[in-house]
Image 1 (cartoon, rainbow, N blue to C red):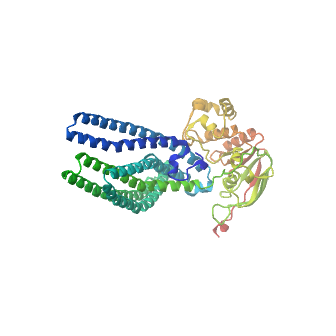
Image 2 (cartoon, rainbow, N blue to C red):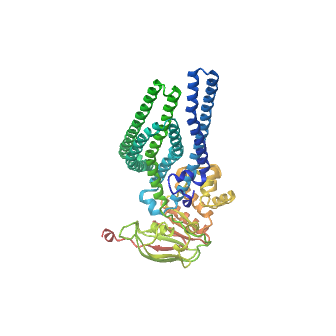
Image 3 (cartoon, rainbow, N blue to C red):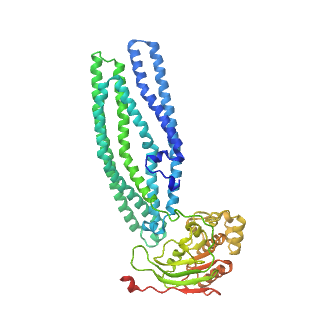
Length: 553
């Protein structure tokens, strides 16, 4: 589901294009179920009257009709539950898939503001809240309104005085819903934020479990998690108390009205004004009237949790993605790379990490970016990848400002290996195919052979060899070669390296950069390095060291 097709409202989402057939099917079955359940008290009325009058033949026929009505109700309810399940599956697939794609396309500074893990957990929790509402209460609301109208109309046919008598009690229920829904919305919003944050903290500690163990920081982690869970427990308890207090208040008018109707029915039956069947059917219809009324009240209060989650989801969707509105021009990143007076600083900080940086990289050259820690080497590569935008100056390739290229197509022309090469859990084939379309196995094997890495991969099972999370079952040097093979398989014009060989010894670093020199062909290569790397034909650019005194001002 793309952003343009994303539902505008919470209820509108129930009838969104990808799964509206299930929603309409549920509504049709719900209408039939309402008709059967409202017709049943009438059958029961005549059945009781037939029994009391001694009409045995009619009693048996009406008993069979009652059984048929019960069976029809069961069949319709089973079909409705099946379609609810299909609605949940289709809605989760489209809703979560569309949100995940949009989240990935958001600007880097936004994702880093709270951490990608926070936004992922927030999306997971909010989507779950919305889907529970859609599958359950949301789609049931229409059927419950129909039940309410039909039950009120049927009661009016029996006794218009009873129908008028029930209206004030219905109005009291509506007032109770209005009083409780605002409080429920605020509690739900705070609780959802707490859940997303707490899951992110747990995920962060689990991702860095080695650091926690080596620093004997289990107690620190447990304390922080327990603090968050205590906050969650407090909010969850307050919301639970609010829900049950609401249900008790909502039930009081039902007990009063049903009790009054039952008392009146017994009185008029004793006075021979009503038959026993009429009294039974009227009490049953009164209960049928307040059942949907109570359900509607519950829905409108429970809806506040889903509405809060929906508001949070739309807050993310309103954020413009990096690729929104771009065209699909075909181009190659050829020509000299020119940095002209580039300055950059993170966020709202006054100081710049880079200050008026200017240099030229000839087309097809291998260039090393050198400088002390904190001089901005990694930041310069991030600007090349357009993860951030320079505060001043411009970066041009072939005489064209890189901001003028369509972002997705631009990044597809660039290969990048960071300080810690990243891999997804899967196998060697799936990781080599990341960002590559239709790469034959033969090409993958040939590239691994060129990098003198195929024998190691073949001994582990070839292209089907398992790659654990972050490639942890490969050594640092092996991960580096696997990442290099992945980038060399792509049809790219520019290679960027952010100190990927920093953990290797001097000989290993020089061997790695010789591989780059020998295999990069006509591609331009920019590599941020910290230690010495003497490679024939390579160019060097030294970034100036930042002035600490200036940063403190």
